[in-house]
Amino acid sequence: MLARVFSAAVWGVDAHPVEVEVNCGHGETAMVVVGLPDTAVKESRDRVKTAVENSGYRRPIGRTTVNLAPADIKKEGPAFDLPMAVGLLAASGQMEADGLEGTWMTGELALAGDVRPVKGVLAVALAAAALGARRLLVPAENAREAGVVQGLEIIPVASLRAAVEFVAGTRDIAPVTTDPRSLLEHDADS
Image 1 (tube, rainbow, N blue to C red):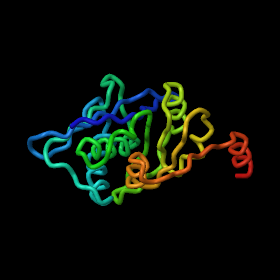
Image 2 (cartoon, one colour):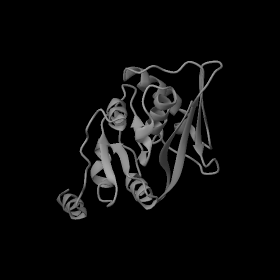
Image 3 (cartoon, rainbow, N blue to C red):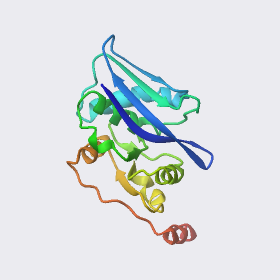
Image 4 (spheres, one colour):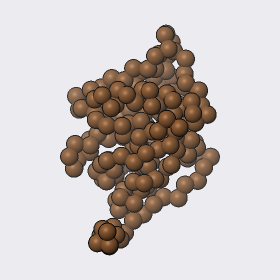
């Protein structure tokens, strides 16, 4: 079964949309990541598999292929962990994929399933809004930064389970909005 989750690759101050395609199929149990991933993205396989299990879900049996498209843009860092894990759960039938429509996400996964902050969330939020996304799931610690972007619901998630339950419609999480002036005041106080 195939699932699609949207995210973005960050280059400097710009973010480029990335479609995270996950297919769970037959064959020897393995997870392969393709689409020009760097070492941190390749290591996502182990973080994702462990976070999925430690969050109370099961790893699919058979070959799982993750394609980060377009393949000609280099993907760096751990920010693809969350979309890969959610895609894996949708592709393996452990969650409904309907809630993924219009949803983008970014975040690193801890082995226990917690969502860790990542760099470039503002750039991802700007790209998602510009391309018509309805909402963006971000690590809770990055929510204030992304919340300055208007026209996009910023959903703070603390764990893989929270993200899955929100997308499935079984958990409510209030969107975050941030007044840009409050960020400047916070920085001035530091």
